[in-house]
Image 1 (cartoon, rainbow, N blue to C red):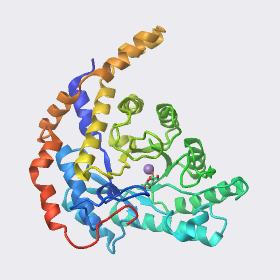
Image 2: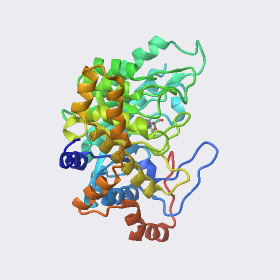
Image 3: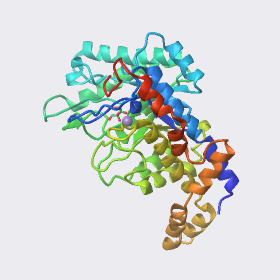
Image 4: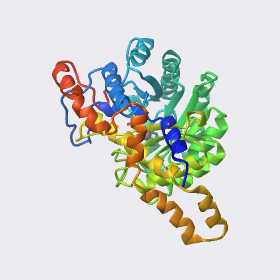
Length: 388
Ligand code: PSV
Ligand code: MN
């Protein structure tokens, strides 16, 4: 059994980053269901994220998506965040929603379009400078739909060249995080489809480039914790985009579809002492809340990550190592399952009380009256939504 005060201390330092886009309206290509009280500006998204932090105590940063969170004065936006106890997390570049990017962005065959994409990445670094953000997070929709449509190897060459230019623009404390995704919106080839491709590019770029593992971006059955272990060993696990999937890139709440998988992933991180901020792994959420209320859904998601982390920290590592070294297959498996089967909710409730928080963050949020306040006050204007 692990020392519980140590477990609590680690959980206190394990911070989870919120995505600005989770607070806006979202949906599928079939329907976006608008909700009352949804933010109309990036400032209001930050205000909502601050609520999640207020009740969980471990979510003090919010990732931006540019241009969805475009403002005239980014320094003022960062000051607004600081005013509500938040800071700006990763700046997510968006080079997938402009007509010019029909054939790709950084891998586009047309040098002028590539230049436009690179300029956007560089502008995102400008925004990082203005907001104090450390991470430039990149996901590219680039790829092809038909065999023969473009030259696969040439596209890799173009990506490498484009990334190099953006990488050169990074300041000393800044990082480039390169996310991968199996398919969609391209269906034949995706230019950065997997961790291996991302890692190859990161290694060529330099030590400030690392891989992002979005848990929804793999083929069914993929052993994600194996990928995590490999990247940890290579020192190139830059962060996570946490969410749940049943079928493809569903973007459901983390820990909802497969809490055991989340535990297995976080166990790899915990074993590598990767939970604290000094390890440099960004634990980001990348989710949409299409039919459920957004602020409580983000609170729930943070709690789900905490529960999986707490279980991971409860694994008796001495017993596990002894069983592993003795070749005791069932014994080793039992050690892991014992930790997974523990009910960590009382421990987390205690931790929250230690932190001066309500033991039940969702109930506390509902009691606060914030939801009614935003429903009443946020009338008029244009609600933020996916893509806007
Ligand atoms: C792409 O599917 C992705 O996971 C990337 O992280 C994007 O930036 C994000 O979703 C937002 O749609
Ligand atoms: Mn993602």
